Every structure is written in C-alpha cells, then in structure tokens.
Amino acid sequence: MILAPRNKKLCPHINDPCLDCYCSRLTSSDIEKAIYYCSGNFESCEIYKLSFSHAAEGVPNQ
Picture 1: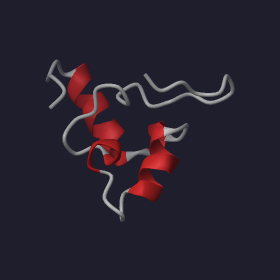
Picture 2: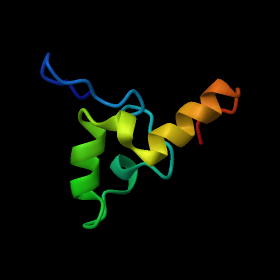
Picture 3: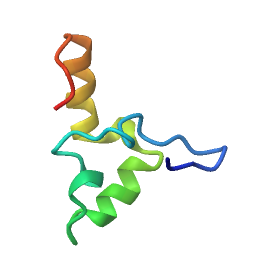
Picture 4: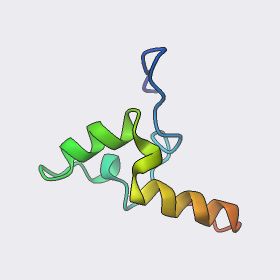
C-alpha cells in the first residue's frame, strides 16, 4: 500500500487502478502525469473524472 504525507491526498484509485490510469501503465511518457495526477491532483485528471462519473452511474471500474 502506498502512503501519502498527511497534507497530500492520493487518488482513491491508486490501489486499484483501471487499465487507462497513468499509474497502471507507467510508460516514460506517463510517469510525470502519474506523479502529478495520482499524488494530489487527481480531481483535475481526465481519467479520474471519467471513472468518477461512471461510478456515479453505477458502472464498475475497468
């Protein structure tokens, strides 16, 4: 399990990411995005927003 400093919130999907999440792919072009979005800026992540809207509709995480 990944622990965040007390003043940062990690993306709620970090421990169970969908296939499209930056943290599940971690290619060289996704590392910077994973660090930025998964560790405190997930509310501005398009992947998170899409999964959040699907969760509200009752669609399971991919």
